[in-house]
Length: 215
Image 1 (cartoon, rainbow, N blue to C red):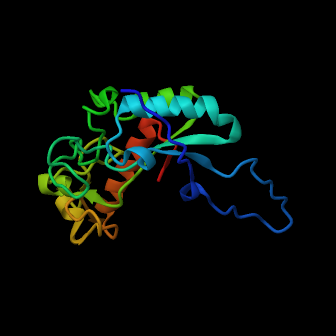
Image 2: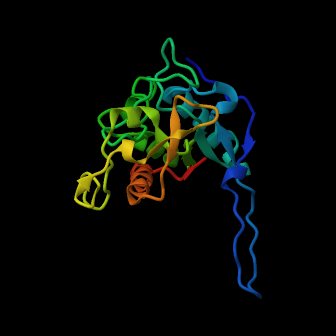
Image 3: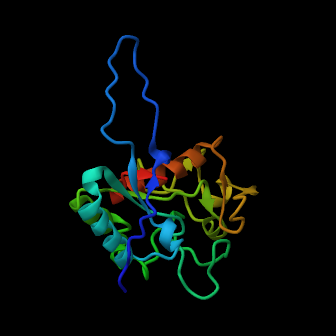
């Protein structure tokens, strides 16, 4: 299916920041403000790998010279695009054994065999672009219901503290669900070291994939 790049390009204000400079330091302005394309504007959550890369190619060819360097996969890249699946549906998300969202392998075939977005990121970088993904705050309800173990990125095994292994049910705050996706995600208890360990495992995974930023 041929994908068309609708010129609904977004100013990526999510990635802007204020630099902190010492008194007297010269501040150098960027040539361009952050610019790029977000898949939500034309595809909502159902975009697949082929369409995403086709749009990235058009961006690289036509708009990269003008500073449009970011391409972003928006939300629900981990959800199966099948009958019954919608924004607040339950049971259609892909997670790994550590309870972390991973790309739907049917829409993102290069993600199979544990590769995640690594191959997509590699192709995007090869176009001279930067690769981003939308991130949901917290932990997947599916991970909590499955009581997935929490990865300790320092040991490569299950996070252990106080002589016990910690799981998703220990850190998921079931009374604090996502306001617009109540069946999908809930907050993480970051007062617990295990909660911080889970978030650390997410960042570790995204770094392995070659993600440049999260939106």
